[in-house]
Image (cartoon, rainbow, N blue to C red):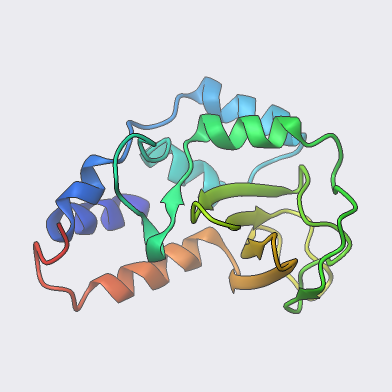
Length: 171
């Protein structure tokens, strides 16, 4: 799935495709797994096996205007979280998102809008959520919105959004 989207981006947005880094090594994936302290969703592992993120020095966005964090950036952020949750209560959350904390080892940041929002893979949803659901957290407004039930679903939706765009229209 991720490789197909990468090829689509190469055809339609070559500068974005050029910003993708090489695949993550097993050591990098294992370090993230160790920092999280539990098993990672398979679709997250597959994403990093396709690319370890975007080069932060390049001016390009991945899906929906956010930069894909490198696995190194993600691993460092998660390593700095001391607990499963930070205790900073969210003022609003969509159904399925635990509002009792903003960030923690169970919310893996994967993309950044360079302002006040992170996209995270949520490993500790409420009963109404899904393990590995993708959420957007606006930490200034203390809001968390569910984007998709999984990373694979988010990428699939993004691929559908790319289909009508003519080749080379995004440079």
